[in-house]
Length: 141
Image (cartoon, rainbow, N blue to C red; front, side, top):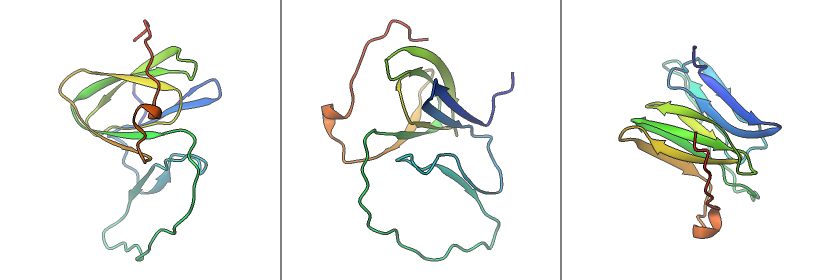
């Protein structure tokens, strides 16, 4: 079975994750997230000589109700277990070097299949123990 280079994972109507595989390589600008998401994820491939005008981003007030995080797998392999917002396990995926995942809803856990290096990007400020609710689940996939 061929693994798609872009995978939107949904449970019912709830978006859970977006996976962009390392093999994705298309010219142009591709936004993978809707404008309403608090994390915006895009791929940009430009030809040599392309210039992007100097710019600053405007100071804007935004409200974030739910933390969304982006993981970039630098090296190694891991299994991500996916859960609904009701903490019910419903699937897993294997991520490898170069893959990117946006965790945009529900819950998740990880199992490193080999030594793995990850870059995580999420909204701040970090609020410590208020930031997440840990739970146990017998169905770890």
